[in-house]
Image (cartoon, rainbow, N blue to C red; front, side):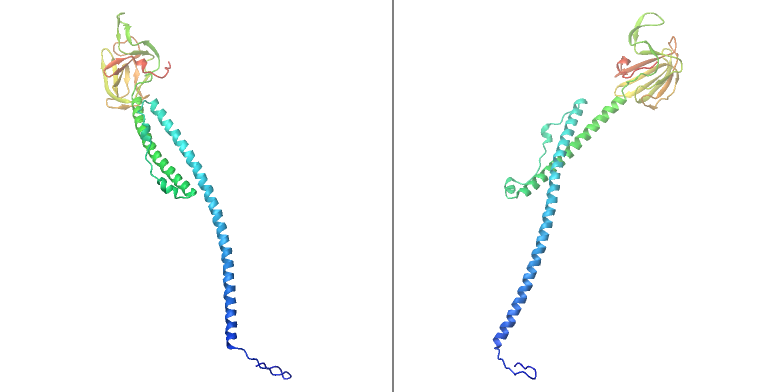
Length: 294
């Protein structure tokens, strides 16, 4: 029933109940549909933004992955350089070489069948993982071998440090090793060392690292000292005016051990220097590597 103002005509309208329910249902459907479409629209917008973000992130990861591959190539080249240097070091110092098969270390990885089921990107990732694993194994192997070289070279260095190899004093050679004329008799006889002449008090140094085993005096050598260098080497320094070391004292190459003199069987101040190797007297000059200054 429609009731107008005071001047209007009263009207009556009949509406079926089913129509009211249908209208309410239609409004509800339109409302729900609007909400659904709105949600779908915003969801699509959000998904698109997330997709763009993921694409950008994937591009950055791809670039980093490509850089990693290049870095692995460089690491592999550097490793090969280290292997070549190791081989040269072994050749220089006559160290045993490493069998090439020993360097070929077993490396795990997926089977061919598994790779066939992977995408191209996944296959690249697996190949990179295998390469990293290989380089890690090889680097550990090479580090171990360099440790062996270091140990060997330390032994070589120790031997070199204990090998007589420098002039024991300054001056000039007045008599060499071998059959030489005796200054007292004028006859040739075996001279088991080398005489170096200079002023009394000239410093005399150890020609290699070692331990003093004798500090003595006799009629022939006068005051003398003997140093045991190990590895079969001993050196003797005779006709000294003064010994600067004691028995049992350890000395280093270049350390002053005595002063030159003319004690014992001598015609003037000089050093009688001997090198004994495995009990045999040898020419001292064949071991000397530096130049002597007078």
